[in-house]
Image (cartoon, rainbow, N blue to C red):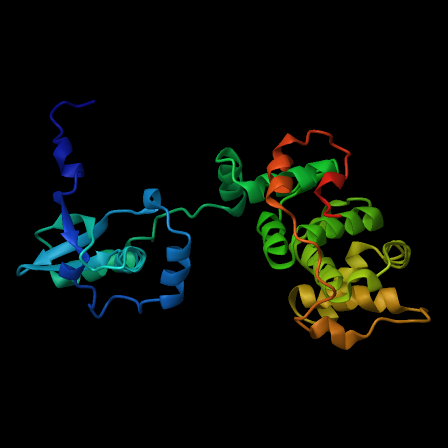
Length: 296
């Protein structure tokens, strides 16, 4: 390395101070509108280790926040006081236009984390939900993956969404029906397929007979269902409609379509308990069906 290079040119000219929230201003015109919903949600999951320093431009003795307006509101809500101090990274030599430019472009070259990367970080952290989902997927001799390959599910965000929205048992049955119907071919684990089956299970519950589902739907390839789904409705709803059409064909007691558009859903599933979640990380049998998770 050339010793004549001044490395300080690559270090921001800033200093850090603890400043009470009441002494910070974040009403500049370039700021986005404050999202109360985001603040409340983040406050309900508050983690002190996740709080980043607030970026502040000190102009004419006023501390203008140009990165961190939601952070200060979250801390204020959790602490119950605007007297609460937060760590601030202070810039003393910025003009208003420079602040606006930094705000507009601060995320321009930032690479967002992929759902799989977030999922695996949660696994390393030992977080219950992701451990449970991983164990469930592996119980069917599959893996959670960041890329499409045989024997893998890469729609990671969808697995978590189904778990959060419908619960563990719907996710389990969704995987079981897809595997039993299409024998685990790669295309059957797309986000739309997973969501489409989960929606059917949520809406109709035990009215859908697993063996009949596998018999009726197994006559159609995933590609055929995809074509029908695209002609029906956008997204996973079209997949649910296409599958329900196939399920009802030549059936004496067809399931009613209007129920598919209800958010109420079928009979509630038994909730999974904390002890059952704790047991998830202990499961190593690749072909087990996680029977221990079912409430009696």
